[in-house]
Length: 276
Ligand SMILES: Cc1cc2nc3c(=O)[nH]c(=O)nc-3n(C[C@H](O)[C@H](O)[C@H](O)COP(=O)(O)OP(=O)(O)OC[C@H]3O[C@@H](n4cnc5c(N)ncnc54)[C@H](O)[C@@H]3O)c2cc1C
Ligand code: FES
Image 1: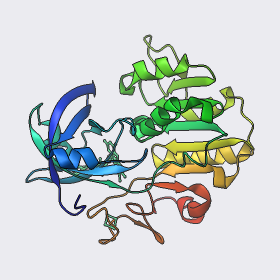
Image 2: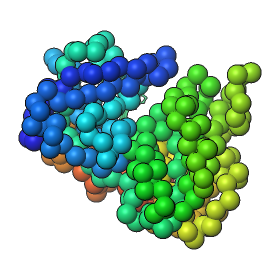
Image 3: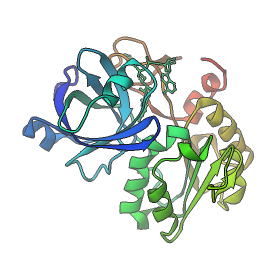
Image 4: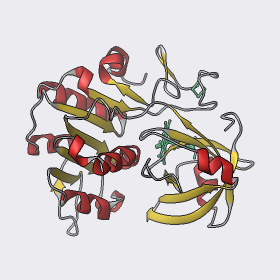
């Protein structure tokens, strides 16, 4: 696959997750490209709304099943609005996969704590699906996910299913709840107090708004988790996705190439500075 050139892909399914979020199930139009396409959990594709522009979107599907490629997209601006206007059978451009993956090899034999906020749950989906497929290779899995309001919650069915799997715990929270909300109320960082884990044995995968991740990292460190056991998925404005244009630069790193998944230990000096 030529990583500079978008390949046409067809929308096989379009599912509305909430008011402004859709999951698109895609398949390359060229059989050869589809057959050879592989990705790792945490990697992203550039999706191109023809004539409008390209946006980086993480794959949420099971990396072991590449028949279809699922992407969950929140509608925020020009390109995502153009994508939202597409229907089943329409085509868009797709190039990828790009970037680093969650450290699933390093996590083997460890407990895993997945901590996400808002749409940050999407980039963690591939990792959770992978762990579920190789459940006996990992210790305890705790999934902590927070939303601002109950209506923001997506993948609810999946979270509830995962919560029933042995050695797996799921905790959901909403900053502000209503009567329909059956889970915790408060910030996602408070959920850390609900989980029992051995700080020396756990590996953390985190994704969400940066302000949330800054607080969550601090809490993890206070609980004794080492900086090199904390991994974050970061977002920056992107154009080339190949380390050429510099749009996604964060200090010495290019988020498209060195990230989006980065070890906190490697970026702590710069990540702790707001607005960088
Ligand atoms: C590696 C990576 C993976 C990503 N994965 C996903 C994913 O799986 N699903 C997904 O929906 N998005 C994801 N994003 C974010 C997505 O790429 C942006 O939302 C998108 O580029 C916005 O493009 P746009 O043209 O629609 O909006 P723009 O016109 O670029 O922006 C419109 C407005 O929305 C604001 N905005 C831009 N991005 C965001 C954002 N992320 N959240 C809130 N406001 C924003 C801008 O500041 C601006 O005010 C990812 C980003 C990166 C870097
Ligand atoms: S998007 Fe061009 S260098 Fe990262």
